[in-house]
Image 1: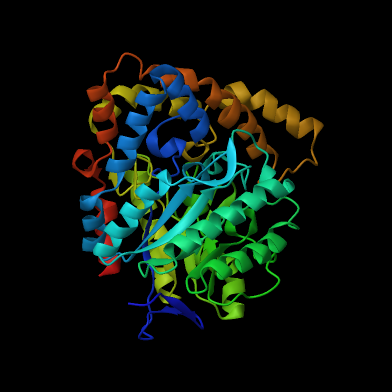
Image 2: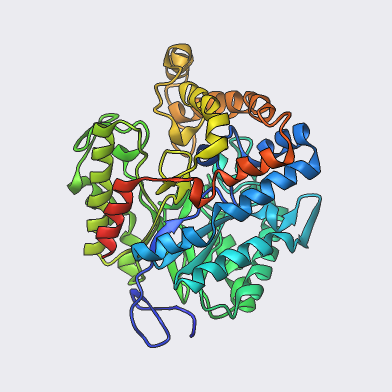
Length: 456
């Protein structure tokens, strides 16, 4: 079996048969996110807080067990049974390199990554390795393990050198693995200037190609994979990846069809947005692949039925354009996953997760209305005193919420989260981690049925 490759507007196998990659993202595994596993703020700050309570060895016991059971045989079997043929695997650079010893590759992280790639391959499922968190943070938000709102990756050559070095190591390791569909080297870059990301891609593509000339590259556009003007050439054997979240599908989304924050959203608008976001790919005759999309579910049956309709409409649009896709995300604590954690973890942390929701400290799970009374004077002050301020990437309202709620208040909750680990013995820590194992999870049946029907 040979590697997949790009042939015109399609991916093909070694026999030249078209392969449309459709599957899920494995968010929350080797790149943890606050809304996925229930902690506040960013991953490295959370790990540090938990380690202060448990000590280094016992914290490692918990996190290593979580990595081992978060995705295993039954998870891969479910995806294969649904008809999926791809999993996009987000990883955090911290598993493979230490800030204390930059440029030195750590073998530990590959133990987990190798296991899941091999497991998926045994079920006939390809992997796309996605570097989701880069040193210095490539975008302004929690999912790049960023404790601030500054994407320092684009202003420090040192961080860029480290990523090139890491990708050379990853590409060398998997260069002969046919079940690796390819490499997604920078998730959702957020270069405010738009001037660094293009030249960096030029450099990175050359380095990866030197280590592994065979695998496909999956390259995200700037501004969270929506802006493709940064590309100065169409690289060989490359897929340019768009992300296509529907506004009405956000936590703060309105009715569908209907208005969300003054913008109309219906099927026609979804298709127009998809066509706009994939214009570069269609004009260059390269494959269409949606690296992330998917609505947020609320628990309200009426609202969630509209969210399933959004997803159904998007899948039909992707089918009509023969676009591949990777739904976000496979497993979490209740917002988007096909399966939802249960057991001792949810019993112990459910009240804390409810508090996070009440305060709106997780941006992805926020309706933008939480704490509205408390923050309304601040939003009003900003609008009055700085009417022309529109900071990158999403403007003043989002920036104010990010700084106050999603950074300041989220970080203030870290000690409270970590303290919930206090006093637990080793078996109890293990049970918490195993709450994310498939056997402890509940299935989101309407979502699974919808996907099964589409993939059939």
